[in-house]
Amino acid sequence: MASGDVYKVTCVFSNSISTKDLSFGFHIEQNALTMASVEDIGGAVEDWWSTGSGGGGQKSRHANEIALQRVELRRIFPLEATVQAFTTGLPIAGSETGDPLPANSAVIISLRCDQIGRRRRNRLYLPPYAEADSEGNISEATAQATWTDWDGLNSDLTALTSSVPMTVWSPTDEVSNLVTAHLVDRRPRSQRRRTVRAASYISAGA
Image (cartoon, rainbow, N blue to C red; front, side, top):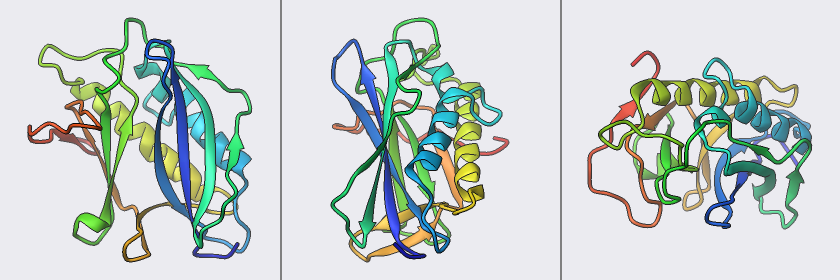
C-alpha cells in the first residue's frame, strides 16, 4: 500500500421485496503513507446512510425494505485480490414511509473531475427511493438533500487522518482524478436500460 493507490468502495443493500441485493461503488485514492482502515471508511459510509451531513441521512429517502448490509473495500490499482468488509452495526434499514419505487428506478449521482471526457466522470446508481413527485421524478428538495449528504461523505473521507478523497478512475488509462463536483439527477433511471430523457440535475444551491 502506498500513496496514490486507488481503491473501490462498494455499498451493498438488501431489498426485501425483490430479495435481490442492490449495490453501487465509487473510487477513493490513498492520500497518505498509511491507508485508512475499512472501519474508518465503512463508518463514514454508515454515517452518510444514517445521519448524513445536513441532508437528513440517506436512509430517510428509502423505504424500510431497503437496508445497508455491508461496505466492501478492495484495492484495484495496483490490483489486490483481497476484499475487506465492514458490517459493524449493520444492517440499517431505510426510514421513509411508503413502498419503494421499482428496483430498476435508480437515482443517479454523477461524479465529475476538472477534466472533460467520458473517461473523466462516473455514474452511481443508488437504490430506489420511497417516493416520487407527480411527474415521476424525485422532488427538487429531495435531490438537494441527496446532494448535501453525498457532499458530506466526500468531506468525511477527505478529513480522515489517512485521507481518502473520492476520485474518478479510468481503468483504460489507469488514471485517477479527484472528484471536484457531483450532480443528482431528479429523474430515476434503469441501470440495465437507460431512458432517453434529458437529465434534470441538481447541484449546490440549485
